[in-house]
Image (cartoon, rainbow, N blue to C red):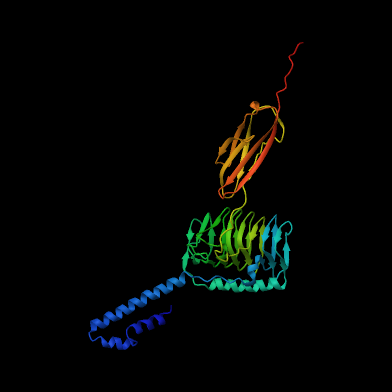
Amino acid sequence: MHVESVRSSIERHHGGDSAGTTRRFVGGAAAATCRSQRLLILTVLATLVLASTAHAQAPVPLGTADGFAVLGASTVTNTGPTVVNGDLGVSPGSAVTGFPPGTVNGTIHQADAVAAQAQNDLTAAYNNAAGQPVTQTIGRELGGTTRAPGVYDSAAGDFQITGTLTLDAQGNPDAIFIFKTASTLVTASGSQVNLINGAQSCNVFWQVGSSATLGTNSGFLGNILALESITATTGATVDGRLLARTAAVTLDSNTVTSAQCATGPGPGPPADTEPPTIDVPNAPGNKCVVRDFRLQIRARDESGIKSVKVFLDGELIKKSTKGRFSVLIRAEKLDARRHTIRIVARDNAGNKATRKVAFRRCNIPVVPPFTG
């Protein structure tokens, strides 16, 4: 709502002529009261409009760069078994090294028209992010903090993450988070970025004025738009994008997955129809058994285990709500023949799995006495 439209509505309420309305109030006190009321209404509405604008940041349009998980300008180099889920490109440079041993689950674009266009779109995206109005200036250390949607810059000109940064979308899956630095972004070893209450990594943007470095074994979320270089050190994982405008992207045993926004709530997740898995690590394997033994049961399912029942020759001998337990098989009391153990597991979604284990009960061989 614009302030001009607010003023028009107030004038309509007072008869369409704000000046005439004022003149109709003969007493100076009455005229002052009217002006105060109008000023109060305008102030409140303008504040609401500004607050709404501050909390509705626009997403940063990536254009064709959206299809890239990694995009460099001079080179893209890799060491170790890096996995890139998405396209990898370089332009105007042409060097891509380290693939293999690295793997790209997408297309590699080396100094071609696709990579060139992606670089153009990256420049536009970088400028878009840099131009978005700041909603809060904060300290350089983001670790140990929780941030709401907004556009943040650092009083020191750089950002670092030591520990865990939490981004809270406050129930809005379209919430935008933009972090702007004049210089560097550096994350410490083992640092993490967590998302809560509907936040999506595709809606997190890091506009970096120089270079970004991700610490060893760190977990990073969001799209890095760096003016210069990006370095992901050993074991760092990224759910987002590494996009460098003028320099190299350097990888080392990383996993980089281009983040994709959910299109909407849709019909919800598909129903769980997968039965639980049942493992018996020490199954006799149809062997001849002469002594009592403990059978180890391992039942697993993503929805959780509701119950596990163990039957010996059709008779229930054990019931448990745990996924890991053992049951004593008293083989010495069984007849010398083939026996069957049947394990039935049910998960919390109502799916059932059955596993059978067979063994033979053998008599203990009689050793003749030593006669000398």
